[in-house]
Image (cartoon, rainbow, N blue to C red; front, side, top):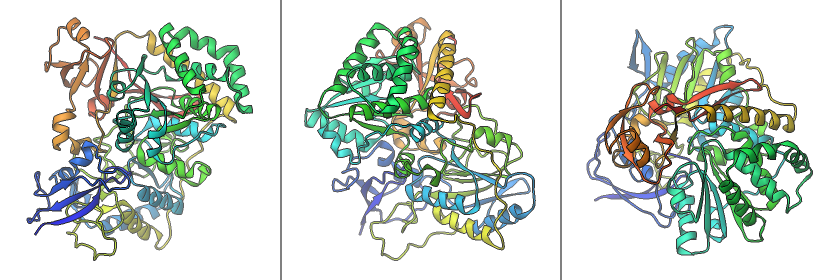
Length: 593
């Protein structure tokens, strides 16, 4: 008899639920399972809806490439080993005196809230620096939201989205947040009450559902938002902090902005300003991960200012785990993980630790642009796949995203927390929090390792100085990018990404809908380059990898669209450390054609 269970999807911290009927044959690793997945309309979070990654998640979790046991490097090769012995060995090494800091933790933004909390407690206990390096676009947005003097209005329950009359969306909302997407569609088509408007540099699912799509070149968001704030501030009086910004806008910033905007863009922003100044309920929604935009720090400031000035909701959609963790700790930022703050990648390069601890990802399959990792540091990976490891990987431990009773074969959260724990095979995937507990036990006896000595990040003495420094850097970078020739190469998230692309592409939905080497361009650009559908093409400066051409009439003629987590796309992204702030910036480049 088949057993039916209510389980939670483990691939992000939303914890969407569905039902699964376990097959009669228990097979630990197989490409095709006999389990049946059923939607669960009574689920409190997702109400039955699932993104493609969640719908096919059991395929990924039962795939033979999924990491199922821990490994330790010995004599140049990775050998199976018990996690306890790995942690004991590393603890002994960390107790040896050394000039280098002991370790730094780099975490993936899709970790669950429980794992993020466990990571925070672990880092605080042993005074280890921790930061999110996978999402540089998020880092500047985090900093902006932590340092902004404006109080923005948050929407605690996404179901309220159905009662809003106007939605202004920056970024691709429908590929970022499946639960929010469901309520947006209900609001627009079932209730017929919403009207949505989008600011977006290329056609995507959000623009398809928009009543008005205001197109623009990549990286123009801060200019558009500043002009929008200028228009709204003429009608509404804001807090004292806004007076300083209004003075700067009137004397200089608006002139710089107006010169870089087209008449169509200014006209569209005037329409948006009228929506934000009326009395009807509205929300500003910003997704940071659609493509890598310069000016994230400025976007956070300007969106928070618009929210306080108009009383409208502001929904920042960075990666789900970071979003809720950040919002819960926003009032006391020193008490939680310093995502987007010191220490950062610049300091990591200047002060390489003995160990780099990657929590929730594999740096060989998810590489954030052009980063030179310290060769003297050894990697300790908590990951899900066992391929493409960095050469200096010393240990590899398999993880899941949950901390309660686990289905040992599928690594799903069971419906009954009081049931007897399932028997797991030796070395099976463990929740990160449990592995950190074992690690902490090894480090605590007989004495903890010495504390790290990472210097604080260099930031402005107040938000006004930081804002102006970011504005100068942004304008300089924007003019530099616009002066270059060629087409924009934009990394897009097709539906939803998994933290290790090496595993994602083996599921059915990835094979059909998320072809990693797919390169989308407009019909005019394809005709100009004499390219046809499905023709292989090589882009200069992108590692010589072949892409498969996909032609879409709705795309702009001056840009290529590639899958954001395809390694050649990721590694082609340009980046640098700005002089005024040693956080890592990266943006989509221009490619000669």
